[in-house]
Amino acid sequence: MPIRDRQDKSKDRESAPLWERLHRPKPAGRTPLTPERIAGAAVAIADTEGLDAVTMRRLAVALDVAPMAAYRHVTGKDELLELMVDHVYGELEPPAAEADWRQATRVLALRLRAVSLKHPWVPRADGCGPTPNQLVLLEAALVILCDSRLDVGTSMSVYSTVTSYVRGAVDSEIGLNRLLRANERSGGEEARPGPAPQTAWLMRTGRYPMCERYLGEAARTDDPQWRFEVGLECVLDGIAARLKIDHAPSGT
Image (cartoon, rainbow, N blue to C red; front, side):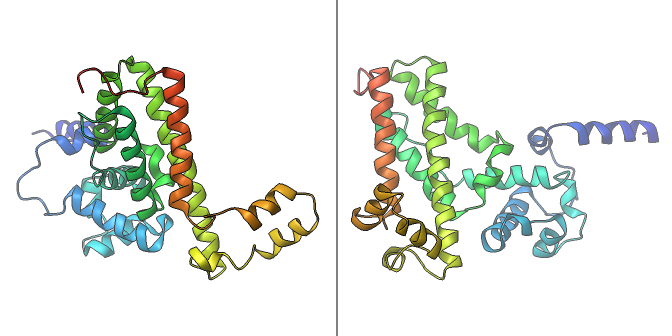
């Protein structure tokens, strides 16, 4: 093959989207390095050292390969993040197609929260999609919501509303966990001795009586799962009331 033709083919491969390139048949005799191995190693680094620690050089060390080896699969860190997010979303089991919309959406939200807390860097990287496994989850949710007599546009709005709640709640929970670690607390009862010095001073000014009342009186302030589920039920109640889809679809 002429050199120019080989260069044009190489350029075409590099300009194609990540998921199209990975779907193509692999040439024989290439390195056993796979997108799955790359993603798994990168996720492990991010889980233990943080997302900023994930570099192509650090990844090569973890995989015990040449520094340029991963570039056969990804063009750089942006595409690596796509692989990582897809790998994490692959851990999520989509809700059952025959489930009632509300139960299915609730299960989906709880699973999204769990996987985001397991991989707390995901909210920072989640905007890189959509990836195949993200679309698997979305597809399953849309099937269930459309079966509840919603049109596909409204179904997408419901899905976006619930997942936005999950992201916001989880982001706050991750931030609190980070603060507790910085203050050498682990949550639960250890979070109860009192507010941080700055918060304590602000409460003593007397300007925030309801906030002070919450800190002193509210039950289960150390139960993030309970707080998440209460908020989730409020979101689902609002969706059900607004769209009048509180009952399971006909035939279930």
